Image (cartoon, rainbow, N blue to C red; front, side, top):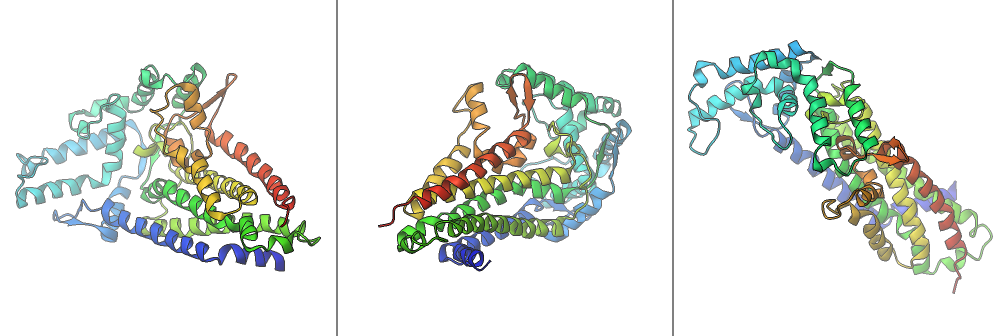
Length: 424
């Protein structure tokens, strides 16, 4: 155990490690703070005054929770009716909806009107998703709907998907994948259960930012694990002793995996703990499709299950990056070179616009690269599937297994590469 503690101390107490962890904390802290301030900057109170920050979050939470319930046709009809009643209020007549020419009194009246709609704005977003046509998004479509239109709320979702799959935009999908998606849409359990779930939605939206930042930190932490021995000349001592050539290397690898796990889960708990403290834990048992962000998703899961899947996928991704970094560190003489290689292998492909590489084959290749594991929330929102000989599987079925195996295979190669290194 003393050797393990020593190796972990070497990983976590280096100047580069401390600096990277501090930068990670500052970056994620500022990201959460800015989202709290900016996201709710347009919230209005009953008097029409704009508010932001924690006060705005609590106000919106209280208003949204008044509409918690089962999203039946009657429920949608009530939302449409309520919206019409607010719009038809005589005190809002003649006020333009937007524009720089608005007077202070007009702006306040618009804010008062907006305040009355804040409670059902999540459902309004779902209605917009349901009734808008492909490639056409009308934020005010609810104003043109009638109560009787509520009967088409769920059927629109299936019809939209069928029209999308028939378009050129979906030509990258195979026939089996199309059938899989349609079956998923048709078998979704309805009516959905709506609940205030801003905590879960904010956590899911922030997940890619957090996991990507963690992957960079893991890379920096693992890069010197073997290369520092080359740079300091301590490889001569380590590799000329019996335990150094065996147990010493094993402890290094184990310390690398343990450090990766600790940094990952401690950061996840702290960051998402703050998010849930601010926005609340409510809505974890609501279906993903009960939010505009997950309306088109083909995964039949709840918000809490979605976040757990995203975090576990990101964890496997960080373990793979850690294992790959340790392998490269055993082969490359400098930590800087290792970091550059990891960035080229892992990070660069994630910035490639898939429209630049068109074609079903290349699209599938891009969707199987390790960077996809850091984008778990995106995978839940998009129609990403793999068709292997007629068997359709999802990224969450393929990627964890594939890269879990790769990570396991890289460790013995790293062990062998450092052990066979010829000391000067």
